Length: 163
Image (cartoon, rainbow, N blue to C red; front, side):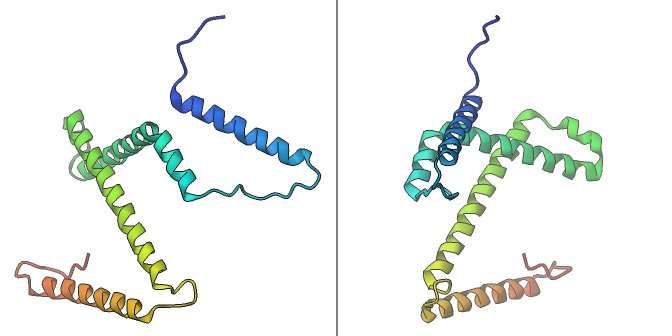
């Protein structure tokens, strides 16, 4: 039998997770009173998982950024000439990929803050804080009005672009 060098950490993690889930499934099916329910997890469990697997998750985020950046560059350059893609060097793709990771991270943080704000107003729980709701609506209307006014007063605007 040929000995192979060590397996990559991602593969080891997948194998461990499959073993854990298989053992849990076997334990549930062996008991007569077992009810199918998802295990209860808390936010601290998620933070521990993120802390323990930070290197793998960072690598996956950078790889996702590289794929997104490569597809974006190819799509953008193919509008002009698809042979231009071969002119782009690896540092350019890496730069775009880091920008893509930053944009995805900032967007997810922005969406998280919006959801946190909506939850803090109490609308979803049935006990809305009307002062917070009123302030959010006024801020939203003012931001949209500011965007429309700034586009309307631009001298070089050929069309109304809100976003």
